[in-house]
Image 1 (tube, rainbow, N blue to C red):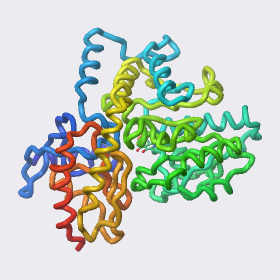
Image 2 (image 1 turned 180 degrees about the horizontal axis):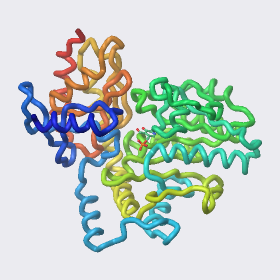
Image 3 (image 1 turned 135 degrees about the horizontal axis):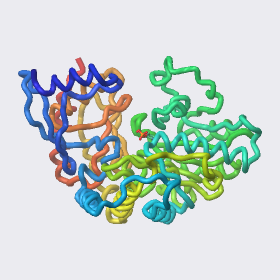
Image 4 (image 1 turned 90 degrees about the vertical axis):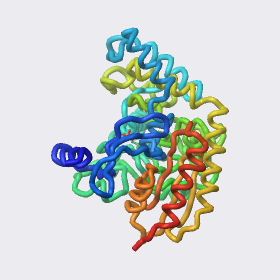
Length: 418
Ligand code: PLP
């Protein structure tokens, strides 16, 4: 039995089948390259180098094992620096510095650390309700939060209830808290204004709907939504778990709308771990986060010294203006090149910075295209009806614009939908 089929058998026997991975066993990774075992046409295994334009949905946005972060991690471990300690047991210096740094970079006041992006969503929801009751004066148990159709805020039960995707909800009910959310069309400001009532605590929205296929709202949407929230005493909260930390060519995606677009709160995750850890934070105004006093919220691992030290280093890299300018320019060039591909299966090409998607015509099976791309040596993201590209932000230009592009072009041009 080949190693790949051995791993497949064990995975399907001992691990829930909630993912259907490519026939690939990744072993080693550096920068934008992943090396692993793949099955050849004759069924035997061979080593394969794959260009990573997936970046674990942006979580390895600085590439795999980025040298600065690896060095930092090794140095800290060699010095026996503390890895974990409860936030209740000691005052974590790295966390204090991370809070200060994110506050300076975002213009918001404070952070509350978690681990995964979806925990950030749950926390934002809870914080918004708390603010609704304690500050806005909403009657107990009446608070509502507005979210958008086709959103993706993760896999917690709250995020599941907030979702409009029947595939993730079917038979996971009952959803007693369904009325806690009002769902509106993404990008529709009129619908948003109409959905607001005296019980609305917050509007939680992704500035670009990445998982839905990189849906980019019209220019000014985020700024206008911000204005409407302010005028109606509703918290404006952005889920920047995937769009944040440089992915779209600004440190935070809302910054494309200028300083007036600044939200009351935002969630960051994925790349905050620098591809080495799992870190997320909810960043918000003092008025919101000060309400979360001792015992009301917490996390065993969130805010750990090592994770915060690595997050600080990752922030140093992605907040450099020259780094962000490069992301914007490289993304623009890549999108322009993708638009030159002539293939009947392509419906649209769109992107902001290095968050990019090719939408396919509805008849095409996305998985088949995704698998073909992998066979050609390029790892991409399978999104609803689109192939997504989220390359490492520091990817080598030639690898993206020449090596990767040529392979993508060939696959699209030769793809036969039949
Ligand atoms: N929010 C957004 C916008 C995301 O894209 C994701 C993950 O893809 C999440 C939340 C959930 O993050 P996690 O998988 O770390 O819980």
